[in-house]
Length: 76
Image (cartoon, rainbow, N blue to C red):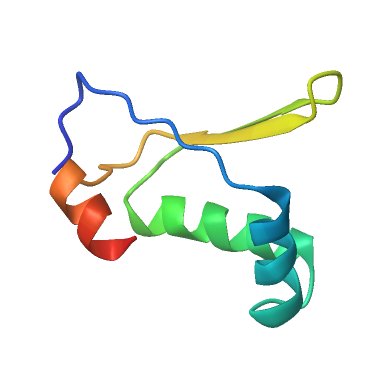
């Protein structure tokens, strides 16, 4: 279980998202859907998507159980 007092942020290059979209999923929307599905799998009751068009980024946040730093490093 994740430590609820910690926050972890990371950035993904658009080229990585492009690679994911073209090679693993049919569309970028599918990538977003997979992220939301992972939230539900982690026991989330709520998922929030924030899109900032001016600064060209989006955030997907949920209230699921998360994962520890060690689990994250082991999986990614």
